[in-house]
Length: 282
Image 1: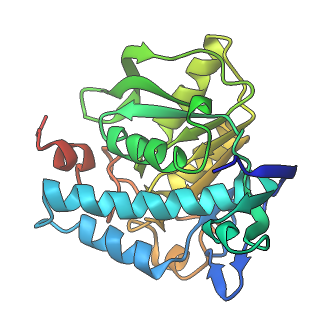
Image 2: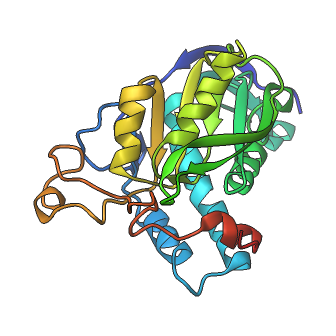
């Protein structure tokens, strides 16, 4: 089949509601700024709820994670990626010259780098790579591996990140950088990831998009203060340790929000996602 003929490319940015006929991607209203998108998707919330159950173990969790990241990636790509207008011959060309579909698709020449944060981020990153390879030219896709872990003090509180190894394939200046780290707790790993590309003189990227399936107010605040250029798409905002007064108000609009324990674990959260996904409890 001939390659789709691109009429032109355009960039669609910052749409709060993504509409296609009767389908609408809904988002929660909040005060974290236009760069943050908290999806209000019942199916996504249902899969996240099941993923966090104590009885959900490795096999089921991996399947649920695939559904979750299909939804997150679709929302981010539909709003943030360049679009090309194309003419695509269909199989009906055998019967009529009218068998050509005309419409908008993701620009197949878009370059994407996926920052895979070992270990909880491995499966989400591979899912994103597989899905994007179905709609983009595979030669424009790259998967970088960054092995990072929490650095904690004697009381178990997070004080930074440690890098055990990096497999980074080069500059990201002409690419969209995706960071599908599933648990947006403190925001430290996302901030450090962007910092590492800068230290290597590989950035900045064309656009930086974080894809935590669950995030906290603390994560949002850190993105705003340290990484204002990062766009965030998340399936759920967890602020379970907030004051009743804060919980009664839209997210990000009043003080008293909290989603982390003293040891920086998300509440209600989903527990040790990396451990569940790998069945390795270390």
